[in-house]
Length: 139
Image (cartoon, rainbow, N blue to C red; front, top):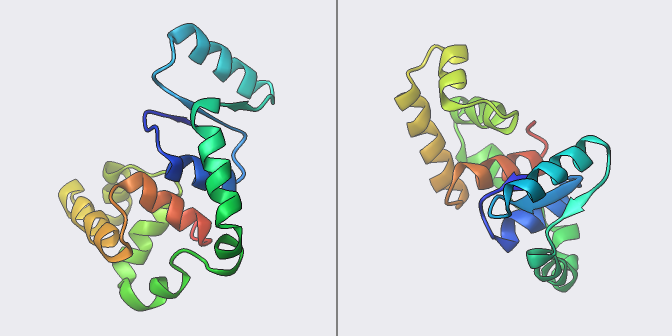
């Protein structure tokens, strides 16, 4: 996972999702290029700057991680059918434009649904929303 966010939450969710690596975009181009080549070759790359913090966070809350799905109960109760469909496509990596094209919605309509999902599920951006959806089997 290549990201611009120095966030324990993203790294913790990446570890939970069993990604093969995690590196911040702030690194020099040469390091990023090498990391991408190594990941392509099957070698895991982890940014130790925040990995230790995330692993500490995971071990402290291991009990909660194993027993409480993040939003399992909320998916059936809080989201309407259109929001569930859009969340499913978002989890698959579709952009707002692609979702709009597939569902025959304008990109602004999709953006509104994405925002509603974020608000209902208590996340602050679409990346967190996609991680949440993936962790709850919506991909």
